Length: 500
Image 1 (tube, rainbow, N blue to C red):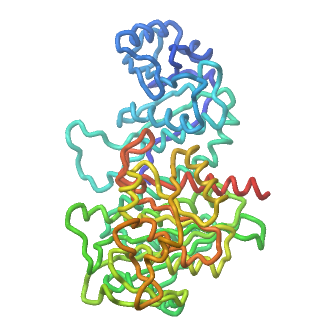
Image 2: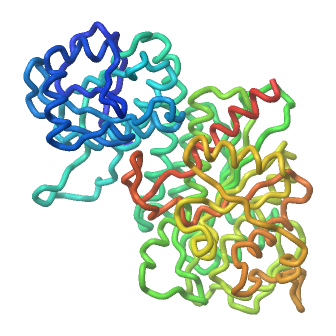
Image 3: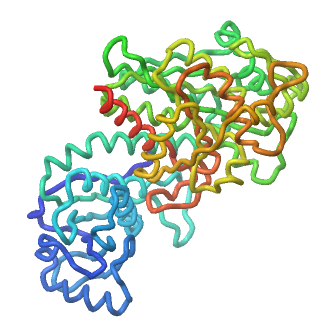
């Protein structure tokens, strides 16, 4: 992982070193430990704030080089706004803002985790640490030289000063594994398609075995035997063979129903015979963002020893237009036995998911199942890049995902399902067709998937606008966002709390 930032926790009494980062509210008030660390430099802050019209708004910063009165090389003041308005996810943002102000050169940094009304609790300090690591991530391994003024990977030794070191370390232990999972997902999405093709993706997923995850890789022969004709129909146009990877984490009680997560892993999508336009086709290396999330999530669950049984499944293919590629008009038979008329070969992700969803639903009988897929451009027309589209056959699962999405900042917006949309994918020649026309494209795609989940409580997240190329945020400046890892890790955590 491209992660060159070391984060640790020290007591408030530890002497600040290197760059000093402190927090103030919208009245420029500091906490007691911060005031003590600043000493006479507090007057410098007041003068600099007035000169720079710094008001302490949430996420704003004031940068003071070589401040008088303290030994710090730089003093960075981060505004938190009105203390009563701070939400849980804001601490992650404050960490990201902090990392965004640091230079790429190696440096020591001290962050005083204190608000004006007192010390940050352990989980808040852990969120600061997570935000720093998430923002610091940069994918630049293929660059052999930097342009003038271009920042490289941030390298820093960050000490977060807290009131209770043990509590902060305890909170950060699981949180750091979730950050690792996000970074793994980002790495997979950012890799070029000549490096990350289905077999290589499967190899990387298999490395989760080191954490105690049972990993099974289904090759073409195994998938043919299972009858995965929908997935194999997509893969047949590429010289790179498809794979399905099943990952099982058994952290719960023996015999307990697992929870399940399924990811679309189209490692590159040309559109097949229904070929895409050349403009921005290079972005289609990220058409495996759902599968990347599932791998990152499974890493997080295993690394933090989640007390749950979980299944992660990913279908890996390339969608290419060679002489063996499937054609519009072809009819394929899915693992479920249902037949599918191919109308558009660029509607391929749902074909991959159809077989993997059916396999997971029937083999593992999960408590609930969530799939993630960069499935449709239509969801971006509807929701832009701020929300993922959510479709579900279960209100409880949908409500929980909506709540957690708001809390984590990985937001979802529930979209409709219904018989009126479902009939749009009925086919004259097969049980269904793989597109339902131009209107409601993300909805008819979800209706297609619903035909392969049986009665399993299920949610489909269309992450086309959020998994890759989404706008930069305070905690992500990478093209691949790692969207979904934090959302679904929290979903699993809440599920465990509700059922233990």
